[in-house]
Each structure stands twice: as C-alpha cells, then as structure tokens.
Image 1 (cartoon, one colour):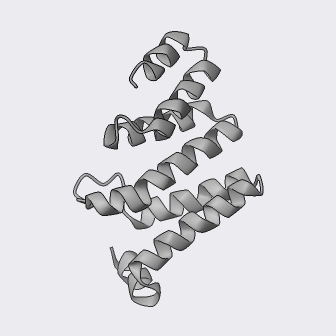
Image 2 (cartoon, one colour; image 1 turned 90 degrees about the vertical axis):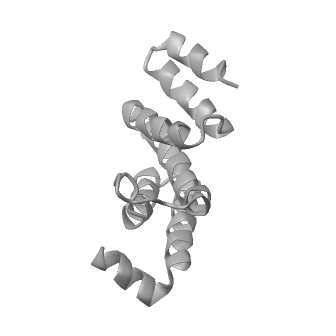
Image 3 (spheres, helix red, strand yellow; image 1 turned 135 degrees about the vertical axis):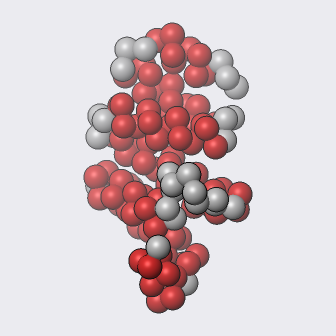
Length: 126
C-alpha cells in the first residue's frame, strides 16, 4: 500500500490512473500492444484490483477498472493471447455482465479458441 500512497501524493490519484489509461490507449492506436497492455496492467496494479480485501467504489470501477480490462482484452486479442484476453473479459463481465464490448470481445476470444458454443452463449447474453 505505501506505493499507492506515494503515487497519490506525488501525482494525485485520479491523474495517474487517467494518465496510464491514456498512455495505454495511445500505444494501442500505434499498434504497440504489449506496451499498451503493460500500462493497463500497471493501472490495475496501482488500483489493487483483484485483491478481495480492496473495496473499489463503483465510480473507480467504471472510470478506471472497466477501461483497463477492455484495453487489456483488446491487446490480448491483438497479441493472439486468447486465453489471457478471455480472462480479462471474464473479469469485466463479472463486474458489468451486460457490457457490450466485453460481450463482443468474449465472443471473439471464444471463436479464436474454437469454442463456438461459448461464442454463441456469449452473444446471446445481450
């Protein structure tokens, strides 16, 4: 937790998260998918996402976690890391079950993994 406090004290909590997401998005646009994925993962790490003891607010989930998970899934697909991308989609859909892009990306992963029934199930959620 000291690292998060230090980052918050130096940059302001919102600014560092927004900056990492923005940098990830810019790297994705440049097709530097691994570097973009690293930025999204850094943001999730600073948010302490995945720690069951950490209770993120709905606002932080919507503003920071959801974009990081979407970006991470997109990067995984571009890097042909479909299992990894599918896991990001599962995390996203566990938070926001009807998230349009999450459903779409999950379906893409399922098709790429040869799970056509899973792909149909994914798109039939909507």
